[in-house]
Length: 330
Ligand SMILES: [Mn+2]
Image (cartoon, rainbow, N blue to C red; front, top):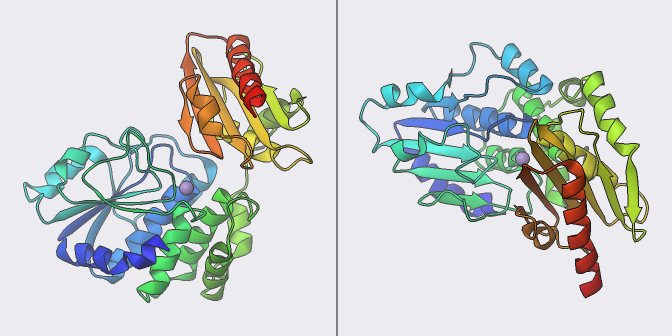
């Protein structure tokens, strides 16, 4: 495990720093927030002065619940406060970036330049826009950033309150879609470890409760399903509903659960003039190769594209042509 291999170096950086700032990706989810809070607890136990940077104005349900429950217990700041807190002493400060490694995805891109010392802890693949000049702890075998932080809690022998164990577990449950995706022995071990220190599965279920209207909108996408070559699930939304990118991704995940399906593509509007595509594969289709042809990115098993100034049918046509070609080359 990457994080265990690098735990000493990381601890050295933590010990060196007078002020530590934690920042995850935009549109916080339970993995981003859970790992931020888990790390915050580790740093607190190490008697560090630390802050969590959050600029998001709106939060998804589970994130909102946690932030309300922990009001006053975390030092949450917006990015415009960072410079003032640093007070010109950038040298012995540290920025730790969680659950993303891309500069355009972090809560605040503009604070990156304030920190000569940066650490990234993430389970996503690296890419062209990966933040340079950071100490990178990246592990694509990890199910989630919460899994990585849990390993760290154990490795540093941190005493964790059951509530925080629950939050870390909720991040793992979210990113593995209830232990069905990207789950390894290590994931189960982390879940076991968190349960043994008091994490509550019931509370995780409460945090993951969904909004019934959003759920219904997502299910509508499944009713428009089409299966290509008996193994590619393809679905597109109507132009009347705007989806969040994460919702398209969730549908793409779900489609892989069905018999014989090896890849999935989901198309929908993500704002009034932007179309989003989310794709998943079990490994026999190279998603990044397919999506690269229409301007997208990702890795072998998942990826996404956003396309402006085209409608859903145009994107559908483009995508189907690329898939057909790829199929022909097999
Ligand atoms: Mn994650």
